[in-house]
Image (cartoon, rainbow, N blue to C red):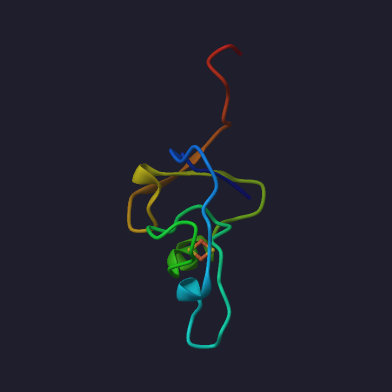
Length: 78
Ligand code: FES
């Protein structure tokens, strides 16, 4: 599976102790769906049933938004 996620940030995020969870760890979102980027907010649970070989597009890039499978993701120039 693959997932298209739109990011609007233009630079890095600086993390510090305040970003740590109760277990002393910092969980960074890698699924792209967190509403608290760059931190994981549990939204990745929406990806648990994504099928192998399918590309998904999430509306509004939020786990609670609509999800649909797409044939492929292509650039405008293609
Ligand atoms: S990895 Fe993205 S919300 Fe957890």
